[in-house]
Length: 337
Image 1 (spheres, rainbow, N blue to C red):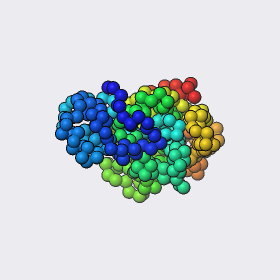
Image 2: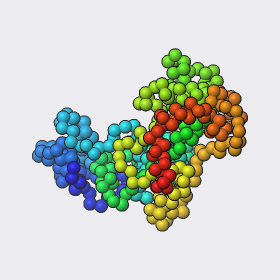
Image 3: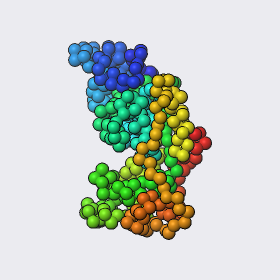
Image 4: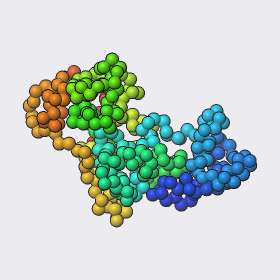
């Protein structure tokens, strides 16, 4: 597909431009060619001009048309999974970042908002601020025309952070099924797991308070389809599968990721550091009892026991098999960091 002959000078720090700028006849024609494989007819041009339609409005109408559903010309549109719309366009650094749950997700989102001049007093609110479109940094709030222009711009880079799959899964369990299991925002992610062990019924307060063991959590993941897994323990490759990536970074070398972005920032923004939000320090014990079958009340005194305490041989083998591709991607990220 040929590049769009769109607005010559695009301010990528203003992704909402396409909702304000009226689409010119040349832009309308280019959009029709991209989405339908043909130029816009005179009647459509006149109607859109009379309405002063903008790029985003034209795209929405084309996407919803029966003709588009029949011809399906726009094969570079990457809105294929629930994760694609959550990609972050960090304009000051000219970076498209893939936020993967339980991989410094909150920290990077908070940093991205601060770099855009829109930092939140409570870093935990960054998820809502981005998902709701209060800040339009997420891909779901950008028209395809602009996303396609970014994808073709050699000055932009697509990057992601990856984490050791074992650490990520145990961290997720300790957070979602341990320390914070009774929070309503957490139950939004974990109800389906409790229901699996409750005959399909919603969990009551007693069940949530009692909690589940790490072995039960792994059993649920292994016994249910990948498509139903929550984003916090879904495979990391599922976030990355729909596009090419310029650089992958490993979480344990996050300083390389930070340096990469800061080098790309305007000088005035380079003093704004990443910082780590919601990071929980693990206990430093070297030998502890097997906690794979323990309920949260049996290990919460340590807040976050050593991850090895949850890893029997069979559980470690399951994680190695289920997240095998994640291990390969993580090793690649370590080498590139």
